[in-house]
Length: 622
Picture (cartoon, rainbow, N blue to C red):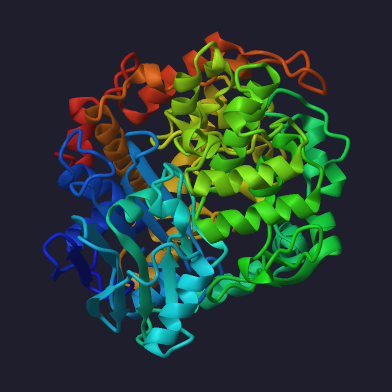
């Protein structure tokens, strides 16, 4: 019998109905915490339980959910995160995105486990949450401003420079379907268009200040895991992160075929070392920064003076941006990539989707499906750095060609027609993360079946499990899976590995913990129990993950998705034009077999992907 929850949760969930200008609170349900933990689990629960079928994602009936987890704000590395979810305006299904900085920890310190935004304000507003006291404030003077101006004015208005601000810029206001929510100025809840949902509600920002540390039953395990992380072998696995952030092995990615080049078409990018993380920090680096209570300072801060001016307050480009605005657009101008990153952060645009939609437009342009008449005179070709920078501005303001591209590659391809769909690299409408399924078929399976589309985080990165001595292989062996796992395999053994990894990521995203850290399933269970006073086993955590993923699946099925939507773009079933994958396309029959085997592992119908009744009963999902 499990113990009652004594720590980890603040005990309060706040609802703000913007239509009715009404604020209410409710106790955090202990049963909900045991079934879904928090974070992504809470998002799954509220999407399924409270959003009516087929509502307009940009209408007042959609809900925007900010959720902490039981480990949010607990002082150990990787804990300063929150999850933001809604029905996605980009995909029509689940939108779920995790984000770092200090905002999530501040919300927990302010006394909230979750914030649920309902309705739509008649005029622009922002929320001010101060130690649990919530007020709705006028934001008419902030509308149209970028995220830096918004944060500065809110802090000035409220008289406290330590206030944490989650906001949108013009991209969210103009309902770009892949607009994100920015925690601060360079941490993005990037995927699925949660920023557009925020803009549709006329909500400019949520400002938070809290002074009460989360209650912890036993703080020692959190201290112990911080020490464990600094053991040399463990710390060495994090070395690249704290030296230059993500994007250090980009030449290695090119060597194995994992680097997206020119809209995932090509394999070779000779200038790769000109745009990687080391080059970024050597050329433009100012410092490395960190999230709340984190010893791994993995976030780049850059400053550029010419030919573009880049404000260091907007951080710097991480791997996904270096690839999406760089190699995937055929661009080797590092200053332009840094400028594109700054603009996306200022305008609240997901850099992955923005880069992919520009690469898509470039390929359409080079194939004559778009012309200078469509682009307003821009030569939108691969490698044109200045055009890339200009298009980001057009997208954020829905001007010219930007209005078409603001709807994402899937919708843009349908409007363009004439075969443009083959250049749209997305799953369920979500543009692909900057990793290559032809190099990592397990990741490709994740792109197919993830509830929110081609996301690289809620996923398996096959190469991490190819070394028998890696921490990751040791973790899965403790769970009964024997490694190593060949990178290019997609047989049943690899599918079982993906199944385990996806559930592990669901646990990370529900607790909420940064996935950069090599914490094992048993370590996470130990941390949860120490903080909350519960007695949850690793097996129970995996069942919670199954419940979360299955709840997301039910939501998507209700919105009209089916097994037919769990598919990769045709491009991944064709070889790259050059490089190591020039003769190694994915095998469609093997990927389909992997998908259906995954369904069976989840307790879903092996053909349709619909959760079986006995699975729902076992998981306690009504």
